[in-house]
Length: 98
Image (cartoon, rainbow, N blue to C red):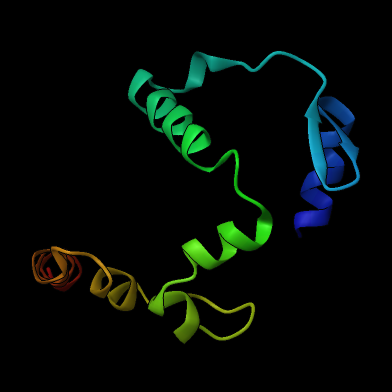
């Protein structure tokens, strides 16, 4: 699936060089909010110097480790990794039990 997506993007927007994706056009920012763009820029700034192995180790929490290979991650396990996990779990239960 990812391969097909990248092939479609490659036709219109990207050049693939090794493990790097190089944009071939300017982004269309008309569909993204200012806060989304700010979050993306902060994430890029935070992670841009990390190797793949460092990024993988940093982002592979208990919820990730509990998931099956190529399987879905359990939303309750994801919420359980948060500092406010009780609040998030209560919110999710209310949202999905109504």
